[in-house]
Image (cartoon, rainbow, N blue to C red; front, side):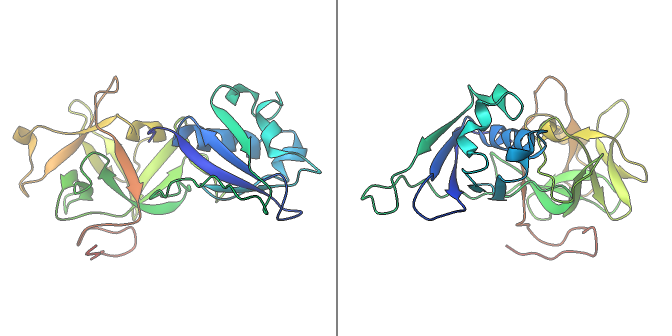
Length: 248
């Protein structure tokens, strides 16, 4: 789920004038990975004072730990020095201000419910049919529960390397042996969050099921399509709680 440069702001919690930053990340994925490094760092001066309010807004206490130094401290996020940079913004009374472009962002919080749609064609959604087959549909969508397998924090931000489980109600997504189709089963498989980047594809029309939708298939070597999590769905699909009829 990476795509181009990604921006965020950082604000000083002690005043509304100083130590305000524009942060530039190499990609959205880098931003989330940097945050994982900061929030889980053993350097508590940073992990206990830098806060993430949403994907594009952070706060910090420069008297304890200046957020810009996360990438120069080896114990925090030193391996992001070549992927992230901080620009100190003018004080509040300055006449110039860097404004980041508006973005339609879905926060990748483990344990939340999401629709899954194609990034290139936003009219195509994952849909679990009545037989538990995960298909690509332009008319229906299913809301899936996506969470890390080893979830220790209910607000954990998922990153590409995380092992995840994708589920609907009491069933989870599995990859069928041989053909690689996605299917809902009782146990499910251990999947990887980064596979949404290019690890799934829509099967050829010869594999279309009896409902006329194409099956979603797991592919290797990054030959699949890009998929994104969203909170906006299509129309009636199977929900993790009850049938959804989101006509959006």
